[in-house]
Amino acid sequence: MHTQSVSSLNEQIKGLLEESFSRVLVEGELSRITFHNSGHIYFTLKDVSSAISCVMFRGNASKLKFQLKEGQKVILDGALTLYKPRGSYQINCFSIEPSGQGALALAYEQLKQKLSDKGYFNPEIKKQLPKFPKRLALITSATGAALQDMLRVANSRYRAIEIDIYNVLVQGDSAAPSIVHALHVADTKEYDLIVVGRGGGSIEDLWAFNEEIVADAIFNAQTPIISAVGHEIDYLISDFVADLRAPTPSAAMQMCLPDTNELYQYIDSISSQFTQTVSQKVHNATQELKHLENSYKQHSIEKKLTQKLDEIKQLKDSFYQTISFKLQNKSKEVQNIKQRFPDIINSKINIAQNQLRSIQKMLESNHPKLKSKKGFAQISQNKKVIDISTLHVEDIFEVQSDEVSISAKVISKNKI
Image (cartoon, rainbow, N blue to C red; front, side):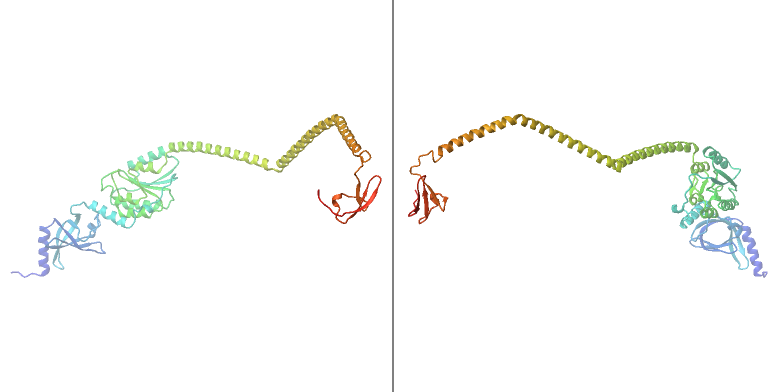
């Protein structure tokens, strides 16, 4: 038997392997994944009872749409090859697909979860869109139908806006970097709003808006951004990161631009409301002014003086009326008295004369000279006429008649 070197043997084996297994489809579970600095990916594909080494070189690795993870079940498309320095064979992978799931769908879910964990979708960080934007940037394809739809809607709704168009690639491998560059430039131009979008297409056509670099550019932008990609049923990563998702590009313009006709109606309504409000305020102010004027007049010095003068006049009039009334009454009374005075005087005189005559008659009838003086005498004491009842036993008194005066002494005193 011919003796050969190890290298020769490995070369023969390499030729046989690569010729016999130039294209293989192998399903298994990923293990021991290594992402090398060179861009190559080394890993092991295994099942329950066996394992095989695999490599995916940088050119093919850059085309992966999803992130390889430990324990993930995949289907490899590649060729069997021998690494001569170690005499070990491996699968050179051309492409990798998730087992039972499309690569793009898996990549979409992986990136969506990653960005969600980083807080890219939080409602709290969404920027508010201006109600009346003045400058708008459209990042889209200048030759696409979506641009014409957006311009048509903008022209019909709100012409008082400046629109700048940033022509970018919207599909293919170069689309994502093109979109990112336009976003960075537009974000420095102090626009009120940026709309990023394109028309409908397949998931592959729309994939640029699912790239992480596009999501980063939207998230880091200072200008409010609307994502308007595809149709209403299409949901892209850019939709979740942007400040607002529009179902279509034309819908984006309807959502971010006010309707001129509605503004006219709103202005008319505001004008009427303003006129009514101003009229009401003028009316209220006029009423208040009149109230203040009346209040001032009621409480002014002039008003108070006038009131006091009126009160004084009323008091004077009342006083004069009272005096006049009393004088009239007294005058009538005096007149009556004057008229009755002679009669009253004559009546009084007659009464007095009658009384005088009666007294005179009584005096005459009671005069001592006219009376029988027998048995009567006047009792006096110390030359003063006294009553007999005032005398006491042993008192000395005088008894005097017209003809005789005697002195006497009280011997005894008895009540009759």
